[in-house]
Image (cartoon, rainbow, N blue to C red):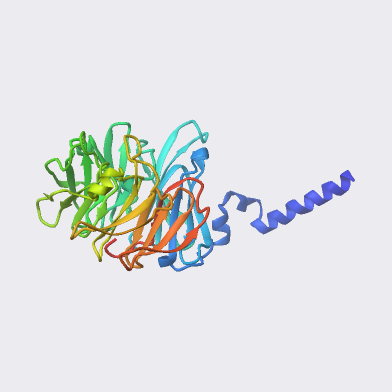
Length: 390
């Protein structure tokens, strides 16, 4: 019996070595050996769910699905508390993550990684200073300039700064320490290398990068909101030359950056008197979205709001016309915590932490199309293929 077992084991080992191309091949990643695979869905049909897997945070990953049928297409590992975004052409997946030599301890290395979005294979890594933000997956933690030249990321050590990465050269360009006391990165769609960040006094700091990725100029607005009396959520609702934020108490603050000087518009409210009586307030994480063609603002809302409910899931999704400041639709929220909008496909994606809900938003009232169940264990961010003007 022992002799038979040894012969069977030896035969199995020989077979495995033959399949792998011999002992030397075992040092190569599987995707190198096989050449990877082609993702079985057009880019415009893919969505990307950043799964933080809170209970085992060192194993975060990006799940890829076909939004038209809910089919699982593959995943990209992102190690400890990963963050994700897509290149502007959708051909590359950019991730930001941290590795420790002993997984949970040892020397720390922070990296930006580049993956092929069509094969889900690793391309390259860019080492960044070990102080990239390690927090929840708000969109503004890991962005890129509108022209795609530079990746811009939030640092926290815990002192705040903004890091700039040259994607083509594979270099970390600099820390922007002028952003100390400010938080999040909001690229300006009408400018190639400009972005805003929200400062602790309620002002917006605008930073313009030069061809080398270094600060060419910067300007600071007057305070847009009161950090004490009416704090805002950092989730931006972007149009081509405007950005809007909602406050904890349901007010909308808008900044116009169409000209040289940033202009602050008069705030307005999401709420009617009846809404206030019932305590309706915004809540969630990436809780707003802007349909740019129609100017419709989407907000996750819940009733009976009070101190500490600002991250409650949505009882309803409200649709607001930003031109008239009127609500044009309200639908069940399905406990959504985050959202994103596919501008070209007129699709709204909402995420309740595990399930992705897909809506047609070609009309003022969103139409629920399907739910991708169990799309993640613990997720607060879903993204679609980038589209022009998104």
